[in-house]
Image (cartoon, rainbow, N blue to C red; front, side, top):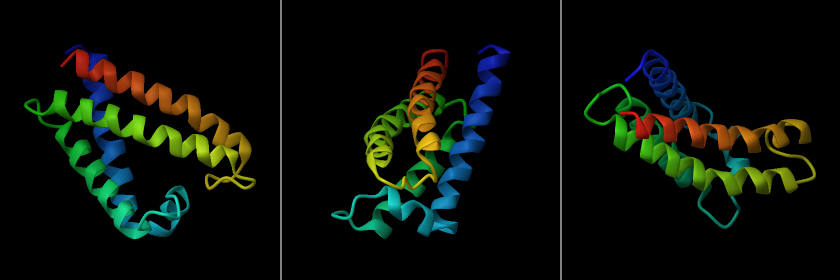
Length: 120
């Protein structure tokens, strides 16, 4: 693994571990991303736990490939949520501008997780 991909993997590990922890520390922030027909707290904690596991797994060479694939799948699952958020009059993320920025950001995260997967 080259230096860029090693650095990217570490950054992803920190980012996803932190994001997962935040699901437990500030669950009220994430509840607005979760559709009303789902049990909000349970879904929040479930995905927070998944993010922590995937983030930590990126720090171990034996599980980098699987963690990157899991992150790719997770970002695919989150993409419709971010598109749905953009359609709201007042997006959860704060403003329409930020909601718009999150869509290409999801594609960037998909691409970067794919890079980690293919080069590990």
